[in-house]
Image 1: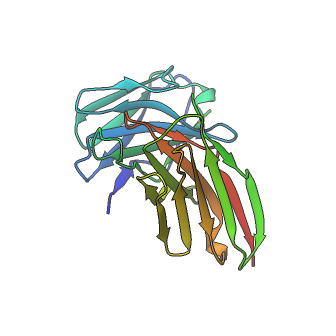
Image 2: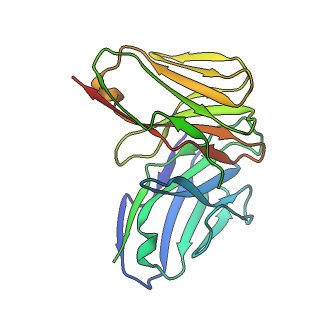
Length: 114
Length: 110
């Protein structure tokens, strides 16, 4: 079974802090993704990566950056956290660039910015 | 960004009833996926559909990939309380990005 592990289930940070959300997958997947999920807005793609050291902006990248130094790890960084970044953050991975590979999700990190 | 039209938005049914939900899109997809999300958890893949017209079952769940490649439906037969959750359809683009429906919230009354 695919295992996507997010480092924290719940996180509380303060406005202005630099926040790191970590995601690790154990299936040698090439693709990794970060989403945020908000009521009424569904899942929105923040950033994704097709390979080590490679990143692409998703639909809502503003206020975020990412890092992929190793294939199995994809980090989401909130450079200076703001209250409107309070949300559920979901990491996902898939095997290859090919269009028929489903994404598998972690359990999510519920982040609160005070 | 682009979204799929998923309906109904919510359902409240009696245990034992069958459930049906569907997704439509203005774009063609080569792969349709159905996920379930329990409260406080991440989405879990239920069924993946790879060919137009394909009908696939997973236990009490059955999903079909529409002939036009612009729609899909999910049926749940004989619902049970643990079927409660949010069901998402998703179309997989040729870049590997997922386009999600808005979700169908299912509640089952014992």
